[in-house]
Length: 198
Image (cartoon, rainbow, N blue to C red):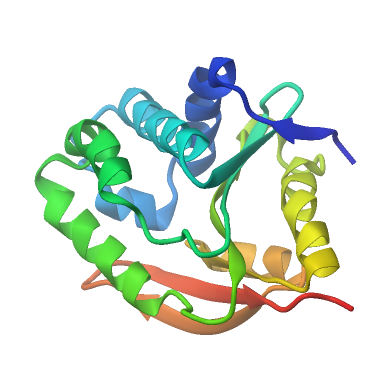
């Protein structure tokens, strides 16, 4: 199992690049991002800004030693974005989504409305591994770093999967589908919950 550590500010550019590579071609992100935006540049900037915001706030950003993968976990009770977080993402969002920004905001609103209000839980907001390194256990290590803690503390965990093919992967880590949702004419997302394991 690869070693996992907390990210530092020096890791942020690499986190942005890794997550942009991981989500390149993702159905939901492709639906939300403007086709006129350079994905590699704009998405890297967006994910870097999101990771920076969570490092400063209530998130836990985890990476492997070479930043081939990254996970953004949000602490219990803080899953809903703050005004400060929204402001920090305003410019990167405008550059990435462009005329599709209302579509992206509608998707976010739906995700927030469907987010479990009970009980206290960790939220896996983003998980990605550079495609060149997928299958090497990095994603699993980034998940287990927090789900093991959830088991120790009796806390649940929650995520939204934007790809149906990833549902069995998350299921192997104890997550179960609660609901399948779509935002407007967008592709589906799978809302997944994990109870703590005794």
